Image 1 (cartoon, rainbow, N blue to C red):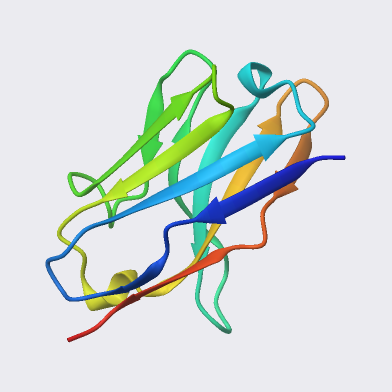
Image 2 (cartoon, one colour):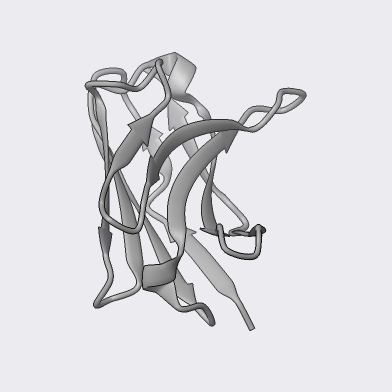
Length: 117
């Protein structure tokens, strides 16, 4: 059974930092592209950051220079370090695992991030 479990969300003041973690199980982790997406109520889910199997990273335009994605293949973990947080970063953040060979996506249940004074 595939499970992606996010943690690390919460309330933070503007300018602050948070580190999200995603623990993956039930998949051959190193074969998957791992990503973080976010979604606000009534809006489309958007890419925050993605890390390929070889470590290449891609970021959404709104988070470039502020967020950093990383992965630990030995621990089946993916992380999102979020710095210089802004109120517009307030969203539910979802962990994604994509098997590009068979075009299958797995999703976590999400963790809430609120940036507010």
